Length: 191
Ligand SMILES: Cc1ncc(C[n+]2csc(CCOP(=O)(O)OP(=O)(O)O)c2C)c(N)n1
Image (cartoon, rainbow, N blue to C red):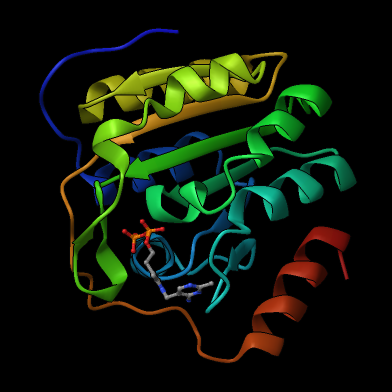
């Protein structure tokens, strides 16, 4: 586990860096801000936006990583992961090497108005390591980019806990859930 002190990364810049490093990766994004930012950076066919479903982003990405032989990146929120911390035990046990979980730790429920989460008292990387998941803490754009490139080269599932400034994006993914599902499924199955 590596880490830094102080500072916050830019969620937009880091999302763009991840897509640049893995342009063909399937991306599963947390409901709300993570999906809004991803859609704003690039509304790719391989983006699987969660609309309304909180607490299932990493488990959905885990299932996808087990189902396909391609890189899968999860853009997770701290509030969402707090709802389902047990998924880290499953990730640590199953350990698909093609899975990279990026946790945007903005310390708030940003999508619903910025109420504080328990991020300040939760060591996400420490919990992940205790569950057998290799984890890295980053707090700058450069550190994120390095950690992401290392994570995708790794033979294990990886968690990157990225401390970010809260943002209020104006971009939105398509609001047609069936379209999102069909689009990502067709992109991943080559149909
Ligand atoms: C089960 C459930 N509880 C609550 C909500 C309402 N809700 C939507 S987004 C959100 C905040 C998500 O916070 P976080 O995962 O930290 O992501 P952020 O918005 O900060 O990017 C909440 C509480 C929901 N959609 N589903």
